Length: 122
Image (cartoon, helix red, strand yellow):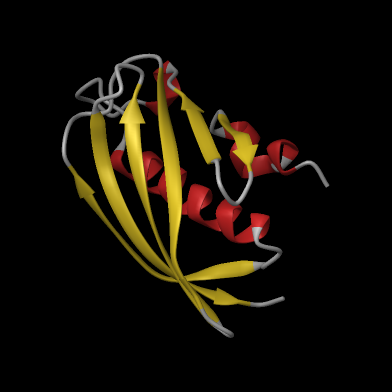
């Protein structure tokens, strides 16, 4: 299955750039549909990008996961032509894993930081 062709990712212009344990990147192309009334990327979409990136990294480790808990700190407005999420594994357990991801804009400005705990379903 090509994950880039799944409905949610395709609909929201989210694309898996690399799905490797050592280099995982997920990109959101910013369109007019990505923006909130203040003309910046909607916070929920930024969150979805980070959550997706952490799930993709788990998939690179051969794990299918669902989100148990996640939080985000918004540092700068999401602007430009794209946002890029770069996740990192903190701990892989037998039933859960913990990750974080940094989200950058197209100027390499750090826009948000996320942490998440995921339940391994398979």
